Length: 373
Image 1 (cartoon, rainbow, N blue to C red):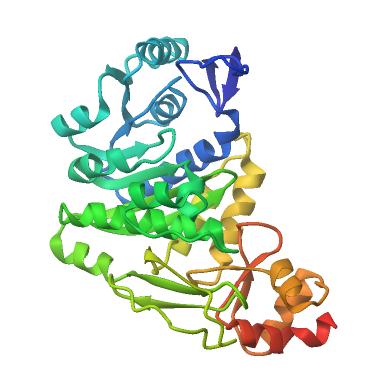
Image 2 (cartoon, rainbow, N blue to C red):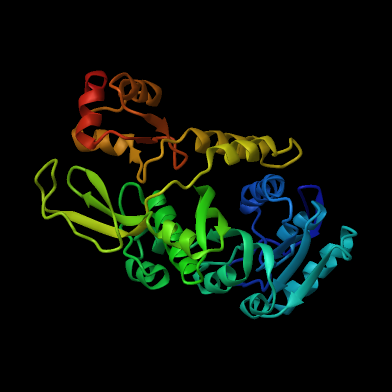
C-alpha cells in the first residue's frame, strides 16, 4: 500500500486483517505522534545546535527515521525484523535518502551498547522499559519515548503495570494522567541508574498511547534532582479526593480527610513534577507547518498543553457531578466559577470533560455548585 506522510512517499503493509499478523507494522493513527516528533526535533535542534544524530530504534516501515532524515538529521534506523529492514531501505531509496540514513538489522539494545546518539526515539509495541536502560546509557541530549500499554500504565492491568514499571499504578478517574506519571517516574529512575537527570519538555496522552520527550542532563546531581520529583498519590474512591506526597516511600492515609471514608488507594512512585516546558511547547506549535496532515490537531493539542495548570492529577467534570448528584454545566462556565473563587483552572488535554485546578474536591464543589443546581 502506498501512502504519503509529511512529504514522504512510503510503501507500507496493508491494513492488518483478522488472524493475519504482519511482520512490519504501520499505524496511520500515529501520524499525530510523528508530526509532533518532527516539530519537536526542529525545535530541539535550535535549543541544542550540536545535536545531529538520531536513532529510530524500532523503525518498521522506516517512516519516522525517513522523515527525520528528510529534515536533515544524521539518521540510523534499526529493527530486528528482516522484512522491516528491507522495507525501510526501499523507502529510503524511494525518497532519494539512501545516502542520508543507514539501516541496521540487529537488536537495538546491542546497537545502543556500541554507539552513542544525540537523540534516541523509542516507539515500541507495548512498554518501552526493556530498552530504557540502554537508551539512557547511550543518549546524549534528548530521549523520545512512546508507551502503548496504557492498560498496565493506568492500573487497569495491575500486575502487568507493577512488573513493567516497578511502581503501583491505580485505575482512577484520571487514569490517562496516571499513565503519564507512572511512565515518567519509571524513566527517571532508569536514568538515575546511569547518573542521568531527566526534564520532561513535552508530554501528552493521546488515544491509546503516552508520549514524552525528556531532555537529559548527564550528571549525578541532575539525577538526584530528578528523583526529588517522585512521590505518591493518595486517592479516595468514595469522594474522589486526592492528595500527593513527595518521597519514594509511601505513608498512606488511614482515612479520607474530606469524607472520612476508608476506601483509599495509593499509587506510586509517580512523577509529581512538571511534564511540560511551556515555552518549548509553544515553540513546537510554531514549528508545525500547514503541510503536516495533523497540523490543526497538533497545534490545538500544543495550545492546550501550554495552558494546562501544573498539577499532577486532573478531574473529570461529569464524574464529579455524577458523584455529587448534580447536572453538569458548560465547561467554560464551570472553570470560570473556579477562577472567580481564586483558584487556577484550565481544560486538560485528556478529554473534553477533563480539567485541572489547584482546588481540592471540596473547594471545587463549593465554588461551582451554585451554577450546577
